[in-house]
Image: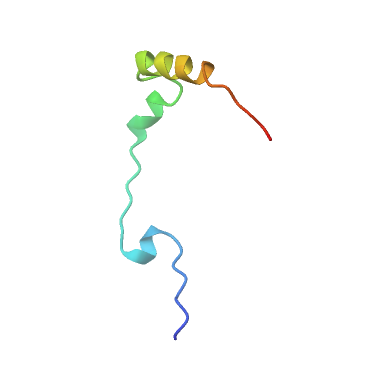
Length: 51
């Protein structure tokens, strides 16, 4: 069997990536506060057990 070639990065696979700078405006904002509130309620009700 031939060893598999190690491919590094998307450009080696022929995928072109474009960075959208408009996404940086949302970096520090909570986009779905109602879902975050629900998720926090679920996590707060979990009971963790360790052996």
